[in-house]
Image (cartoon, rainbow, N blue to C red):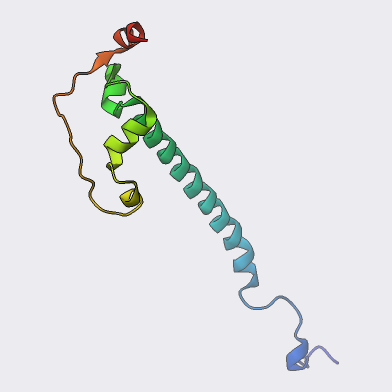
Length: 112
């Protein structure tokens, strides 16, 4: 075979078309997936912490806490009483007391 001749169709040399882009884009997609997993985990743990402590982000900044009860009681207050509907994307029937008393960290320590 001389320099001017093309190799037969099935025996072409070099990578397949688009091969170099897949090598570049696969690690980028993997990194994006890792970042998504990290931020999802961070948001989930923050929400679980908020439910367990009965403390919103604003209350945390102010150093105030809500009623100190068990995790299951707080979970039922947050997502509803009926366990079968917890994972369904529906609006729970919440009994919210907007005038609930909040305590400072010092007062919470005195309670326990």
